[in-house]
Image (cartoon, rainbow, N blue to C red; front, side, top):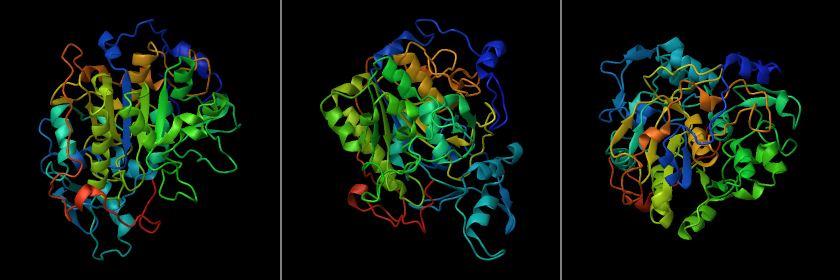
Amino acid sequence: MVLVTAGVITNVVLQTHVQAGSYKPRPAVPAADAGIHKIKHVIVIMMENRSFDEFFGTYPGADGIPASVCLPDPRSKCAKPFVDHLNQQKDEPHGEGGSKADVDGGKMDGFVEQAIKEHCKKPGGKCSQDAMGYHVGSDIPNYWAYAQNFVLNDHMFESIESWSGPAHLYEISAWSALCKVPRDPMSCKSIFYPSLTTATHATPYAWTDITYLLHKEHVSWGFYLDDGARSASNPDGVANYWDDLPGFVDVHTDKQLGNIKPYRAFSAAARADKLPAVSWIQPDARDSNHAPGLISTGEAFVTRVINTVMNSKDWDSSAIFLTWDDWGGFYDNVVPPKADALGYGIRVPAIVISPYAKKGFVDHQTLSFDAYLKFIEDDFLKGGRLNPVTDGRPDSRPDVRENSPLLGDLVSDFDFNQQPRAPLILDPCPASTLVPPPTPGCTDTVNLHTNTWGGS
């Protein structure tokens, strides 16, 4: 692997890949269990801004909250983890600076100080912080039910030490960059804060994303937006920093913009038993679990998506990967491994749901969102990678993240010899210990205007 400092990549990247030995030709049939091809439909659901310890820190068998942990608190001696039954939290700092401060060189002790700096403007004044709060199974019963019946990944790390925008770029392209020359993939350099799409710069992402390989190999895909894309006429839609694909040059070149659709198109495809090979699901702010949105509303959205897949004939050949895009500023105890100059970031929850998933398995492998790309590539692309040497569209990325020696293999979460398991249909609005309790149907409304909505 070639390690570089953020934003510094030379134009000899293709040569360094070969000289450093990070590139090895892939066999025609990937090393992954051949049973992977029983999966005909991969669905990735990317929720927002929760740490692993916040949602699963007390889950049996998981690498959870250590006993006697107490983090520095400038208002007192220290702050301990506490059970937080509240349905709504604050939006804590979670950019590059927040990540580095929270990790604090491996001490994992900056979460409270960052929260207080964000929310407590008067030193010594009364102010609450929820960075150390965690939820128990009775707060989020459906999330725990999926973990208990399928696979919980307890070492899934955000792919980058930064916020939602670059995390979503990694979800679909295994990189976050800034491209100096529009439409030139060799002009791109690693960065924690990439450009966003604008009316005057609709395609800031010149490097290669996974849809380029899918299109080239005639593999069907869809990117589905809860309530559609955000616009002046649709202010509640999905924001551009969660909806990155329209900003990729190759999506326009390949004339694939039509594959980016409102979520109702996914529901219709599932009802017709015609899901594409690869689907990405992106909730809007209210449904995303992003603070200050309600936890119950996000859980209800996830449950409805999963029920939709489980109620279709495509369930028997599906794998659903559920994760959260960054840690949201909430406490986590595990030090992120160093994959390269940009990541990994802080640990997030992740669950694998499939009729072939092992039951009640806690997977301790080191993972990142790159593992989803790796699984898609091994299943549908004969192990092809987003690799400048081999993918036919060279860019200046410093490494091939899917081939990182740190990265585990999600194939380990499946038993392809077992009979496909029956669906687990859950009530989208279960009884819980959240306070206040959700209204019937868990379609609550909260104020997500700019004065309360961090938007990342």
